[in-house]
Length: 334
Image 1 (cartoon, rainbow, N blue to C red):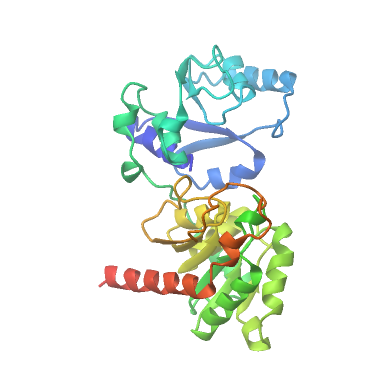
Image 2: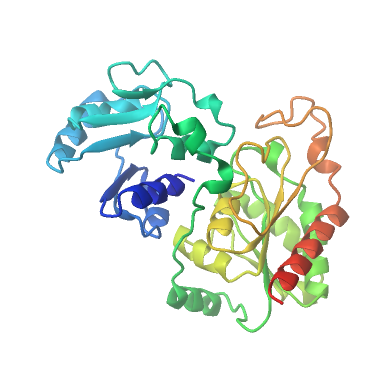
């Protein structure tokens, strides 16, 4: 979602040179953003203070003579490196008492409902940002797709480029309160394959238990049309394979946002979280959620144990959303 900020900065100053300091795992995604000049690896792990390493990195970045820094995390320590790099203008939300660390301080990020609005608002003057920034006017993320790598990935996993592909993202790194049951995903996979689609299961190595459970619920013929990619792809491979799908059905996860950024149709399943904060940024989306009174709770695990916000979301509801999305897409192309 931070790409929307980079896009807005390039609109305002087309000759800008944007470098992004981020964890190493972000680098492959940042390299697919045409607005980013270079991704700089953040050597200090999440939650670590390590003042000496932050000081050293700041001194190294000093030679780049940056004009402005945008500090997106809310912690005080995240604002130290721009200070050590002597960047003249340091912009960010107040967060953890960052007076003195930031000199273009925005007082209350909660004046904006959506996370992406909070990012893009930093590109605008603090006096006008409330009137300038609306979700409908924000540039959506859009990642470059490597067609050559996409072809190679399809061949490596023996996925046909001539048969429609639907992606399923059944994992949720955040926690089980975001994860729709695997038996529901298995039902969806069976339906999709019966209708002539190939199905790709996306996720990390930690999602293998879930994806294997889905595979094991299929018949032998259905297994031949379902490809378990969890833990088998790099992040950029996942980007290119998601772009090969005509539709992706996903829990609220990072992969959902990646799929939106490569232009696939999205059926987004929300449990404990809410699209009122982090929606998939695309016009081709159907959101599925329950109206249960205890959601959204934004918890990693269900505080009431039952996880009814997800368990009571039926596969038929998701398939209905999928079909409505396909029909709408076809009508838009006529």
